Image (cartoon, rainbow, N blue to C red; front, side, top):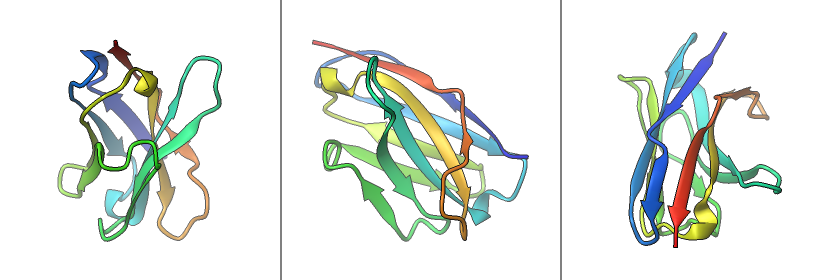
Length: 119
């Protein structure tokens, strides 16, 4: 079965940058669409960005558009989220997620990595 392991979270000042990564194992990475989601304390988990299996299609939440960039490396089986111009409201646990390219739902999740942005 698929396993996802996030890394790269931490504490950063507002206006700074951070890059988080997710390592994918257990089945063919190139057949999975990948996504990043986040959950802030007291709030529901929300969509941040997705990238399809071929990198041809990327989507972003309005709140991060122009500041965050999702990318993937199908040789290294990793998906990354470059986060620039971070804001305190970006503080959350960030989760990597995977779904089969023909599936409809993200059904495999990592354990999450904490991103904290100080003002």
